[in-house]
Image (tube, rainbow, N blue to C red; front, side, top):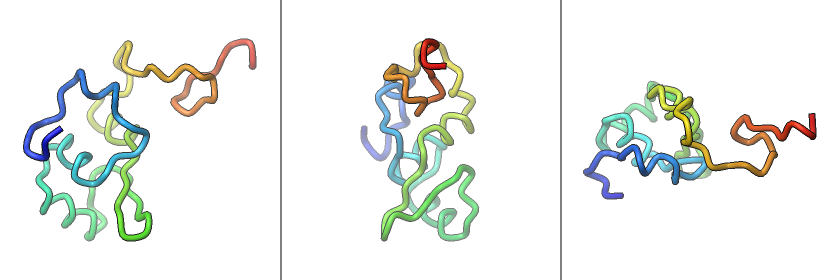
Length: 92
């Protein structure tokens, strides 16, 4: 993924649990400078956290903001741990 190109729908399923600030901003249509400015101001449109000197943005927040959190076939996470809201029926 290049910093200048938008994230394609086929790339969404392969995203990690947390994103770096530039990738999250790119998914929201923001450039690098605008992304970091909004993060510093506390005005980034989705939850973001500092991890030392680095900003991390949960992928789930970005997908929810974009309305992509309920696309069928998007999540391939099936371990049953509940990390992406999927519990195995026999464990309940």
